[in-house]
Image (cartoon, rainbow, N blue to C red):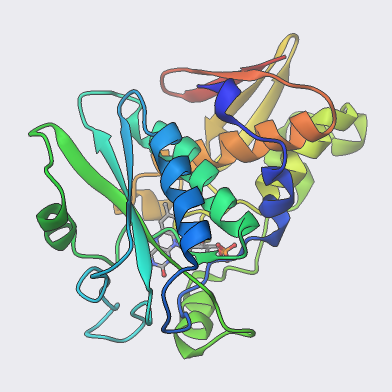
Length: 263
Ligand SMILES: Cc1cc2nc3c(=O)[nH]c(=O)nc-3n(C[C@H](O)[C@H](O)[C@H](O)COP(=O)(O)O)c2cc1C
């Protein structure tokens, strides 16, 4: 993964971010929109394409049943498009996509990863997709009102989004108090990472010379691929370690491991 694209100032965004599903019905400040467009351009590389759309969002999102639970008034959205010929495309979408989400967070904007409740065909109408490309997820972007509106309250309750695993259950075979400070920093940043239906499908193994990320199998994975969640967790871990002055890089691996972090 491209360590050089990661900015330490996003660390603050890790703890400031929450999924937001309702927005003020007004356009994004043009200066902020310009910064987001530049971020999307820089992060689009390899098999990942990040596209910012500043209008025409009304047909993109859908509710759980009918309009129930649908994103409200998003003035803009971002599409996370990936090349399906890359076996690690989902992890890359999660990693680079979360870089974008944290940049938006630092600009004071609300976001929400959406991989299920959107209309891929409507997104495809706005872009030229190559035959091997697919829209993996989208996120609304906008200024969120203070407090949570009805849509947010509903989805937060359904996904149990406030429940997070304890730090000890994020790591195998060792207690958190036995770990070096930088690994605890990484795990603390992973603890608050977003994941589909808040399934938190990750567990870490500390080995001599590296930290490995593994899948935590869940029933929900019959319906939702955890690949994007893993990529998000990788970025969060890296930011947490970086903040404790331990820069490193992720190397993508094959099943049953997801990736290994090397300092
Ligand atoms: C890959 C991915 C897909 C998601 N898809 C949806 C979705 O389709 N609809 C939705 O309302 N929330 C979706 N979410 C948001 C999660 O429900 C949310 O991240 C989780 O409950 C934790 O809450 P938080 O983001 O406020 O910390 C998704 C999150 C991720 C990472």
